[in-house]
Image (spheres, rainbow, N blue to C red):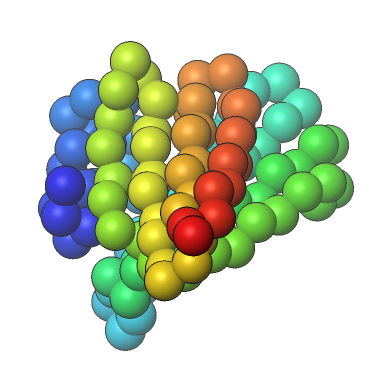
Length: 108
């Protein structure tokens, strides 16, 4: 999926609109909430992606990666694939129940 059209895919499949769109950096930010959890998810046209997880408004986890190559949605889960010369990384993000899973594989 092309990064610049993914905001339409999120809206059509999950019903979420971006919290913010930065026109200078072509960067989309989404915020997902459930009870005391809040998850900020940002991706940009320059292939950077980040997640910030808050509990009671206190940041408890953050991740940042570059090399974004693909974004998709499967079974209400946002999937981001990232790759560099030596690393393959995948993010699975479930916006309805606020779960994040990053997995890494080294390319030999």
